[in-house]
Amino acid sequence: MKSWLRRAFGGGGPDLRLSQSLGAFAGPDGNISPLHVFFEVTNAGAEAVEVTRVYLSAKGGPRPVYEGPFEGDHALPFALAPGESSRFHARAKALARVLKDAGHDGRPRVSLVVEDASENRSEKVFRFRVDEYLQLKDE
Image 1: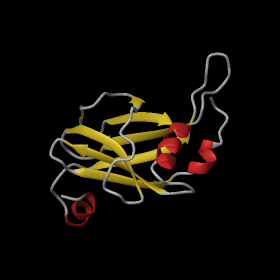
Image 2: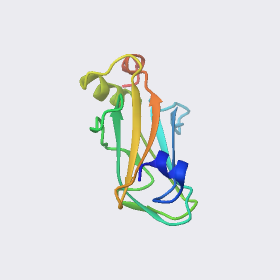
Image 3: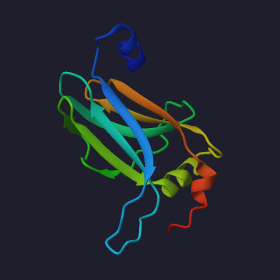
Image 4: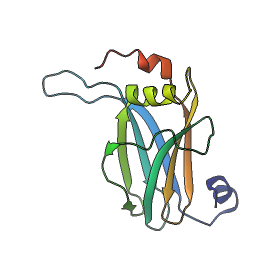
């Protein structure tokens, strides 16, 4: 069942909460890493969920634009007990390059899509600054 239907009418699958943010890692020498996009999946439901697929699609398209590699807490597939979260990330500039190569520039709408073992889909839509991130001098 689609996540918006589940929220509207109840039942039918897991309650995964997705979030996205930008940030960097602090290095031991005081420098910071290049800009990363951080994602988090939280199981807000009452039962365990097996996450089997994570990807990004652009402008509401059903096809993945980016399926990794993501770095983070778990390799796919992984289980989340109720209340557990998993975090993962990718370089902002690398994501910008993939989106640009797929024909998306400016500030396209991008969806983080998470699928579980029962083929339920959860999505988080956000804007991504493709052109700005491609200009980062973080290499």
